[in-house]
View (spheres, rainbow, N blue to C red):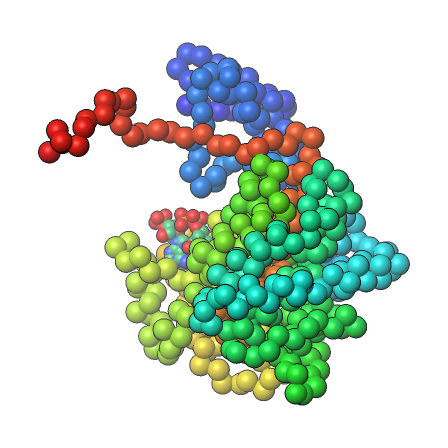
Length: 436
Ligand code: CMC
């Protein structure tokens, strides 16, 4: 098979044997061109085969752009470094949802609208109480976010733009409340109601760390770090959980249920679960002297061990989020006076060794964001099981912005991939008495 795009980028020719088919080639504003093979099956009777979707653009999107070779990440055209340095998370949410940065008046209005939706229905408490206290908080989150679909019936008509926006704002507002409840439930402390006079990150930290018997004021350095972690994780184009949300939403499913599907996907160790796995790995390594042993294992084809927090499907260069996260990590450790953290020593040395090791250099395996976010979150007092939950809080805006974009796309249709079937061909049923 030989697919080519012509020099002018107008048509792609697919040649199989002595047959040719022409397909349109589209140019994005930046990034690789795409060949539109939507009519391939109708015209040739063949499917394309691309396990893991490494060469497949599943949709057209205007939200997030990644150049993995150059280490660039743009939200609506704005570099992640600038947003993390100068912006705040709710401003980033506005940008992802509406496409532009808010004016001061729009920002005040948006913050107010999000704040007004931070409480969850009181009945939600009962859902939490149905879980074991030692349940993984991502199991609790997946269940409770799904349960939201049984509430809020006034924002589930997805054909109504107003209801879509209310559902979007509800999700962004309620995720921190649910996440903090999942944490409080796991440690047996009472739930703390949200406080709408606080900024998004400070409110979240307060719901996690305050108790009704004592006043709590979030440390501004930690609140800023939390906010930055939310910005860095807010969207990442068509990653596994976002594609899951789009696929679930493509059937017209309830928006809250779609976000629950995103949570389920995010939980996996190859995706959002990697920050938890990275920290567990650093603990397992334990001492700088043991690093070579683990590097050797990571390189061994017969050993399933991988260096968690290294490598990325798209970034074949330093993950730009990892650089910002590294700086934030140091700010947090400094603020908390953590000077000799053995995990940090292991992390620094591991990064140094891996960045110079031929195996990692050749395969372009750089530290990703999860490598540093785990250390930062641990220093801030979160147990490792909460790491993916925090990722889910941040990624909710990306999921919902991508879901909205899909619903609003006139070309939208239910997602339905095909397959290369290699199972048994037709055969007749054999009664059980005649089977050996
Ligand atoms: N340690 C050792 N070897 C690795 C690693 C690693 N962390 N990652 C990839 N490789 C090797 C892999 O064995 C393969 O080698 P070969 O070509 O000889 O078979 C080669 O590099 C390519 O790997 P791949 O699995 O085909 O690449 P992928 O694009 O399918 O996987 C990844 C990307 C992120 C799943 C993978 O790098 C990985 O498992 N990393 C560890 C988990 C992790 O940190 N995940 C967080 C991703 S960032 C957050 C997010 O987006 O959710």
